[in-house]
Length: 399
Image: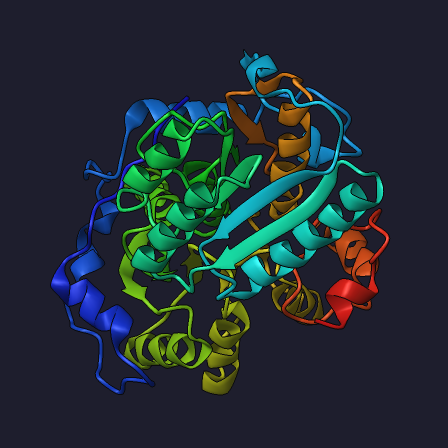
């Protein structure tokens, strides 16, 4: 299994992240990110992983395309007979980093609906969950409590951060129960399976390649990032740096926004006051509409835009007719861990690294995804993969 790595951002970057409210400070004339037109070469960039993820975008996954949450790209199968238990009614425990953003809320609903199906089938007897609220210490405590209880037949972990949670995951593995890590990685391969879409490099590359292909040489791009120190987000920017570094685009800056819509709008407005912005690259689509509204308020032409599959962005894209793409970090992955738990407890093989498909939404399929999700709220994610679950659509619509 591949491992992911964590590096902590500088105190200055963290200070920007933790600031509350909108700032009216004008971005520096020579922002920290001016060097981003060079290829990354930083400690977050691993050439072999970058090459692998970009190649995996073109590899057909194994499994039924109608159930992408069970597909796998180049799986290496693990024998799980040591964890086989007689009968159903297993107790499955879940340590969740948080439900602190719309992507995680959408996924958490999907997971609960999948659990309901497995309970009805008698494969899960009890599902226990904890929410760490993005607090590493709390999640470490949550994991230890699950291990100490001795009552979990399988433990699912979605880590808050990478390095800090690694020892807690290793402790869980040492307890002898199957451990399933998903979404964000840790620096150990002790888990029975690590479940994730292709990854941050692929996401960042999808967005950056689109901007390069759809902007004229010399066009100016602003990069908006949520926060430092999370592997999948850092990899997205590292991939973008690689691609922008080989292009003739001018990168105006990369700014941390904390995912706050007001802050996003404020930052974009400040850059527009200083000159043209032709393209927007984002490492996650939360607040993409706020960025677009800044152009509208300034009376500027819409940028070439890389957002995400959140419905607020997809609907704004359709409304404006702008040139855009929605990279995807497949939300349907929230179904996979609980299904994996039941497979493992039946002694069935699972991939050691379970790589799920990850395909962006393009102009060609925008209308289709909007139609499928017509009744869903703006903060819903189009590729949530729960249309066949009994709670659809009410569980997601009435969140």
